[in-house]
Length: 426
RNA sequence: GGAGAGGUGUCCGAGUGGUCGAAGGAGCACGAUUGGAAAUCGUGUAGACGUGAAAGCGUCUCGAGGGUUCGAAUCCCUCUCUCUCCGCCA
Image (cartoon, rainbow, N blue to C red; front, top):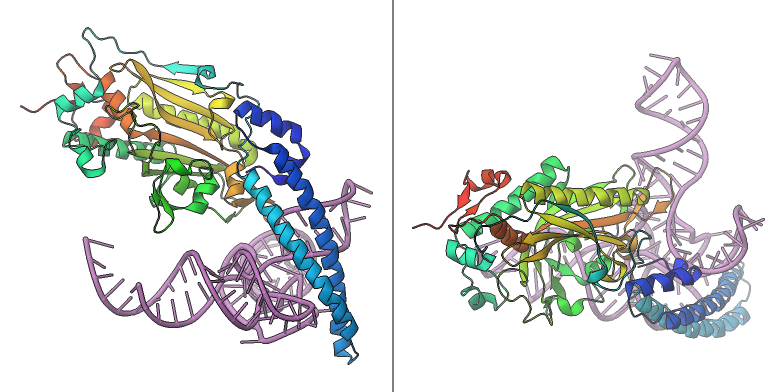
């Protein structure tokens, strides 16, 4: 959420930013409601000021035994007026907030304008696409040959779009999670958290998934909770409604968490393999930082993500998303795409965003810079560090060999008991 | 699922209708004291919104929302969250 006062006083900036993001928002109505809300607020406050003054007089009169009944009668009608006015005011406030909740974060000046993915900028590439003297296989064929999955059995449990890992496949998944967590904790200085997968509505509003993405999430109707759509939600919201004490920033947290997505409307797209699934593992990175440092921290965050791909020897490119391709809450975002030689395409394996104070304001997270200082709103950032199934897939596809075996990158070997390759057991 | 107890400021904690935005304490800041520190003493220390160049002024806020009342942290209703005990269960 943007600051209401900012919205009112910088209408031109807001309109320009929303246009850049390509979001449809009824701004005219918002401004109209705000105007009415403020004038009603003024009137109501004036009436209340009168009431408060009279109440004091009445209290004083009663104390000294004087008769205050005339004054009380007068206040009775004024009280009714106040009540009516406040009812109007509540309605206006509700409508104003409802509209404001749909106003997206505005793009940072360094973000290239654009309407869709075709206008994203490649800022950097790392590694070389491997050259094979054979036709590289897609990960689903490799996985099937190596016995890493039971593709055909998974739907029995949860329907299509879910994965069952088997044997070494399950172990590789676990190894990747441990490897990434250790890497971020030991080498990047993050603190590991383990968080709930079931999320309250307020938290999803806090990080900006609600109200927009309600239909994309699994909803537990009985309790009005949602299955975690991305670990960014629980890991960021652990601090909601808090005032962070001086000296606590920057906060850098990491967590493993499964992510659940209905991906409504996506049925039929990328149905093979593990590129698009309803449940996937992810290691998440979240930072909460002082506002003036957030763009430096954003670059460092991107570096932390890159280190994972490099350790796994996966060729990747970094995209600076254009204004129209960013999520609702983001002010600036890098996507990391890894080359998948079997599929012959790039796969998005991480997204690295700076939300500035947009999420923090929504979740009522504040910070005191130093003792006695005014409260400020810190900035929040997050990145996947990284998403597993696609990384798993590109790992297989990049490190495959002619005989169908897959080399395990050195960094991962300790997590697989020293194993250097995946090979089908005879 | 059943029964009960609670949600007050950065934190702890008092407060059952009228100068209560809220006692007291902790913490923190500043000052005194000290060679320096600890201890001690003194002073100060909420947030949101509105208005204003600013000082200030106004309104609101004691989990949330309604109600009663001239007036609610205090009374009533609903919701929500936390805790304890019992039941069930990994």
